[in-house]
Image 1 (cartoon, rainbow, N blue to C red):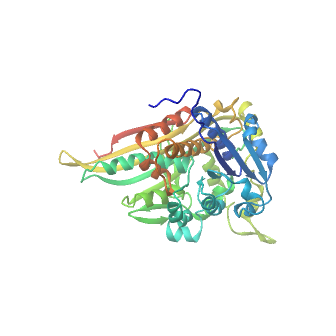
Image 2 (tube, rainbow, N blue to C red):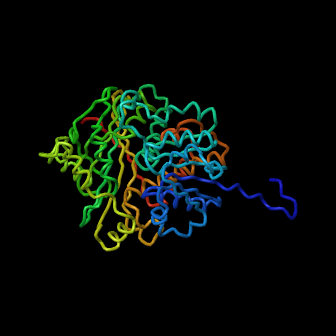
Image 3 (cartoon, one colour):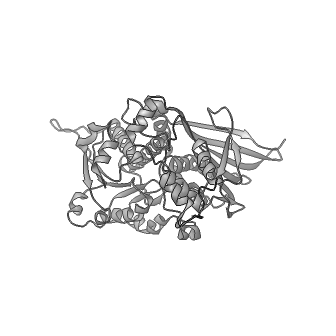
Length: 450
């Protein structure tokens, strides 16, 4: 190594500038986690936070006020002029390295287009996928800008979070390893992802917006079977699955979520892919459905109002962060567990017999009370792992570009990162997930019928 001349110092790394659109339950924790990762790695960060209400955004960071000197809050009545860089917005966004959509998937495309104009990378947490075009093409709308991002040598990281996101990454790691094994007779038959969203509380506490669940129900669950997409009735084709730290098996119901389309696109040779979900929050929505409280029927003497619309209007929304913290501190929330468990089934010839093997990879977040007296206090047991998963995947993708001299271009999912990041970087992601209290588990078992 060449030493520096006397009296000189190592030049400081350029400050990384990140712009957020929205700063709710997930966005606030994502910003905090990025700040913690940057402090650990000695990287200077500055944030531009674009929101509709600055007071609410500041309140979402009520235990992280020390970060305010790094945050430039921009309150607007509409994101559209910002995406168009109207007025002085162009100057505010000069030098931005990364754009994050922490508001709503409907803003993904305008944000990606802005990223191309600025020469910035982008991150989104979910896709606006419940529409006719996605159903027809089985392709996320973000892929329409894949060529443009490749040409610009920039990355659009899509569907990052815990599920989708970390689930895609962990499943992708194993599937890419199986692909590269070069065993001619090995065939990956199926991937089934099981999700647990379970909370034990004295109050009804939604850890995500119930309106999102209603939107997913309206789209109806889907499974990939024998290479064809099957549309099912809600809460049909149920299964049982056993999660770590749970005494009994959990009832699981098919779900139409990003992993289904993403894994099918990345691994088209796999004929069977299913996403399932269960737990107390899912059972509550199922009860509403079974009681016909999500019906499209109109009310008597009120033909303009449907039963579902009335339920939407009266369902409690997500609680404010301070209220969530009070529930946890006062023991109203006694226990909460989020887990994701993916079963990968494959067959191969072993000693002249066809052997079936199931490999399981997954995550478990059970240390919810550990958020008390931390900057994350007030996050839900869903928003915290979602935010931390997104932050860690994003951070290591940027470090791969910044420190390792790597290349990431185009639209990129979690399973794409699993393929493109070197193994030491993938291992660092796994270590950081555990460091931020998200446990990982894996197992291998013989599934050949006896």
